[in-house]
Image (tube, rainbow over the protein chains, first blue to last red):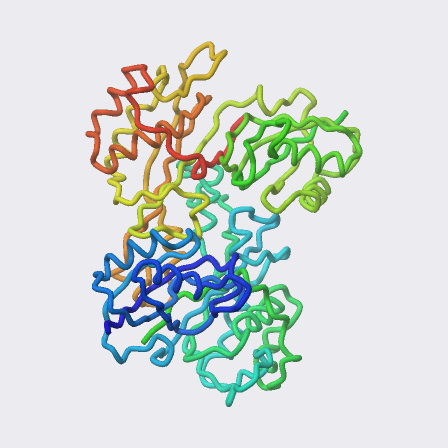
Length: 269
Length: 269
């Protein structure tokens, strides 16, 4: 049996998360059906981890075992031909038989996307959380650094059975404005009203909150996002984040921010 | 009667274009219903021009007359509360009674968005045309300059009754890669595999084709896009664009590119 590793992107809007369910459509089921149609085998696909209902992926990693002789390039092309347009195989490679997309993960990077323009943005409404008030991203970035390192993240965990420990190591955390989607609204006319290089150009309204860790608790990034948004809007002081962490109590943290703005960006092995 | 000018963005995916129709939902009808609900008047809304089915707007301009005493800020907030989330009022101002959003236009800027990554992008599938082959944007930009200035654009016009002339003046045309949506896939980890500043960072895959003119013929930008894509993929030489223009024959140009990648960006008065 060959072992094939896939890099997959999906728009999670339509799915009830990654993991197969009896009734509702899931990404796992969608991929296993496309694989079955291509290879004639009843494939079982292993992911780096499940994503919840509505959560997206830019770089989910999977593996599956097959007797099929298709080249990795053929798997990419033929799977995309079988898949709906909200699930895309970006790359495929044959890997050692021991590789397991879930057991072998070293780190994962998630991104929470916030839009704080004064009016909603119709083109990113499925992929960004709209904050009606302007956020202080400098404050969000600074206080987020308290979460770096190895801590008990119980304050940022929605209760979930069978968790032996809520200690995790955050290797990277950053909040900042992303100029790119602002350009989306601009035009390239030199010196024009919306030229991003011109002096009167408006501040970008998209904020990326990136969190990389060796593992994530249930709803952890969304609870961190809800907490940092409370700081960014001036509702909580920056010192609050370290206090929330120390409390080891979910009630101390901010609300769980909505799922539709969360992306699994990258998995490292 | 007051005269109110609105700046409006919409995701055209769900609409059969701007103009009111008997059966199908349109953006005009959606806005007039929201205005009616807010003011109690049977409002008639005038746009800078109609957009076709599936075409989006970042900066459509409208005006309407009203006896309502709401402030411009209230119009923005209250209309957005009444509108579905794919139509957004970005700004409102009270203008002189003579102002007419259609008759007074000086120039409009349209953008055609192309994605030429090797695999489709699930997050922009509604807003960009996917070219399966890599496009030479330098060649596209160069030969597009032949369209600048005052010409008979009959070759780029889908037949439309009651057009007295197909002479238009293109004041700006440019094709280039837009780095921003590439960043969307990247992470901010310094020196990381996807760090856009790192040496191995992949080339951006989004291409903006911006065309500004004093007026547009039916399907003009989409015919220009279809023609330039034929050059970009190496199917036609750069010299072909000037030949197509001179032919004054629609059959000489490339195909009409799909509507879902076209945006009305800005209207100047």
